[in-house]
Amino acid sequence: MYGLLEGKKALVTGGAQGIGRAVAKIYAENGADVMIADMNKEMAEDAARKIAQKTGQEIGFCGVDVSNAASVAEMAECAVKKMGRLDVLCHAAGILIHAEILQMTEKQWDTIFAVNAKGTFLVDQAAARQMIKTGGGKIVNISSCSAKKPTYEEAGYCATKGAVGAFLRVAALEWGPYGICVNGVCPGATDTPMVRSTFITSPEIEKEWVEKTALKRLGTPLDQARAVLFLSSPLADHITGESLIVSGGELM
Ligand code: NAI
Image (cartoon, rainbow, N blue to C red; front, side):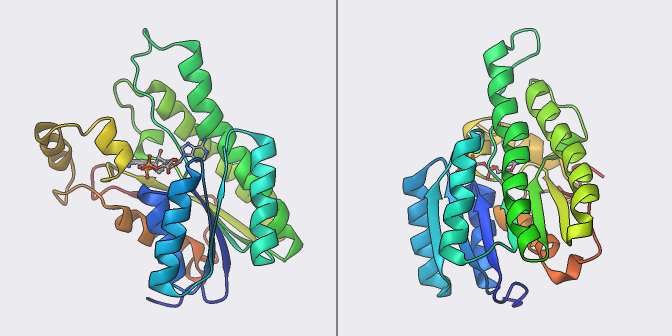
């Protein structure tokens, strides 16, 4: 498309579907070889095959549970074994658990923190360790507008995404001297399997969410992927520690 990642080696977590899959595709369209890592290995394989066919880039896949340190270490090893090094990471794997605070269980709280917050620490750390060896790179974490505004029944989710924003600023500070930029993208409501299976479950609810945006439409995975591409590219060489809202004006 723009050749922004020509020759780069990229890892995308949560790349089997939704925003992560769109990121894997746009990275490949821009000249990167990509490793897609996801809990759902079968879907990761399918995504890898289809993106490779369309773009002609080398697209690998592996299974990972981002909340598990050993699994994340294996993923990083697998990515570097296949691609030789790591220049770019988009960490998109994440989950949403709906529960009012008074009803929320300890298990729900621990699960969402393990995947969204601890997962970001583990995945970014593993990627940074590789990037330091080759003089730097770009890390983009998928956060959420929920990091910046409250949403009913999403206390756990909001807290984890707030944690992602705070974590990435410290990572940007600590890894800047190694040439690593660490940023985030904060999507508003974006039409993905996660959203369709959780909160946008009827045409009426969809209409409500559309009305909340200035641009009067839901985001698409491609809208998010374009922002991720920008932050992953040399166009963003002097941007670090930022969380970019991509919400069609739902949040400004
Ligand atoms: P999705 O559910 O469509 O895709 C998420 C992917 O992550 C799936 O392929 C899933 O298998 C994988 N995954 C889940 N848990 C995992 C784990 N423990 N280890 C490895 N992979 C795991 O979700 P979507 O909508 O594409 O979300 C991607 C990111 O964007 C998430 O971090 C989400 O919180 C964030 N986001 C999404 C918004 C939306 O409206 N869709 C809004 C704001 C943020």
